[in-house]
Image (cartoon, rainbow over all chains, first blue to last red):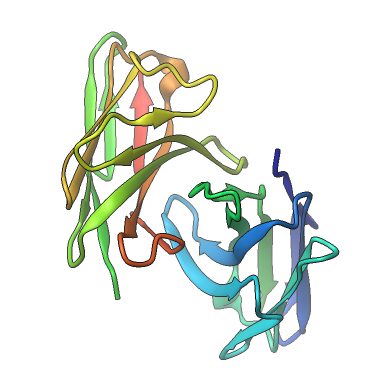
Length: 114
Length: 116
């Protein structure tokens, strides 16, 4: 059974700092890994999707890496801004066994202080 | 980009009543839709997967008679919480997968349900 863990559970940083969010998963047989952003009481916004054959994806100040063999991914946020404050969720799937299921971590709640 | 809507965005109901939540894919055909539930400070938990025109597949521990799912068209899936109780209060989120790219799910904005 796939399990996804995100560390830390919460993170508070001053504006401008570079930061790294971590995600680990137990079953490396995945098709892709996604990072999402969730604002309080809102749905999910997809940030980056990394296919299993890729090692990283970049979008603006965000960079996500994937090391499938070790079951790890990191989300790097450069020059953080107060508007980056949100919960960041990591999800893996579908598995190569054909399942369409996404398995989510519990998220990292990020607060960027002005 | 692909857009998924949910209606209503929030609902308050009395214990014992039934509540229907709609999930629509606005600009693409969704052969598969997923329903998730999220408790405060917890992750999204998949409840069921529905394919257009067929019965939904429920995850272990999810009562199919309690959470009725209908996927009658390629753009609409509904989740009905029957005889709702306070413990059903949660945030319900749907997602939809484009049949051509099943690995990418597009998420709705969620529905907050409060059962009194």
